[in-house]
Image (cartoon, rainbow, N blue to C red; front, side, top):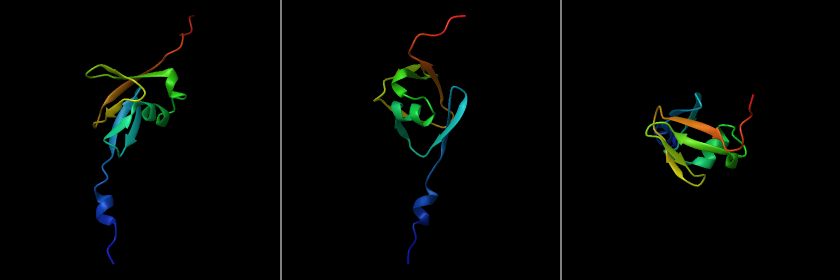
Length: 83
């Protein structure tokens, strides 16, 4: 009987950073909304996802290509507290 081992050998893990926190995925692309949810930014509609290089801000429904070592900044959309 054949096994599915060969299929699992090809699952590549990509490591990237969101606000300096390490995240990992097997996907080559994820929607911005999914990336925010998986990193614990909930609800995602209250945050902005920005690729650092080249600098680009994504909308919630945008497909984001993810490469090893990519760095993303997450900013809250609401008012920021003042001191």
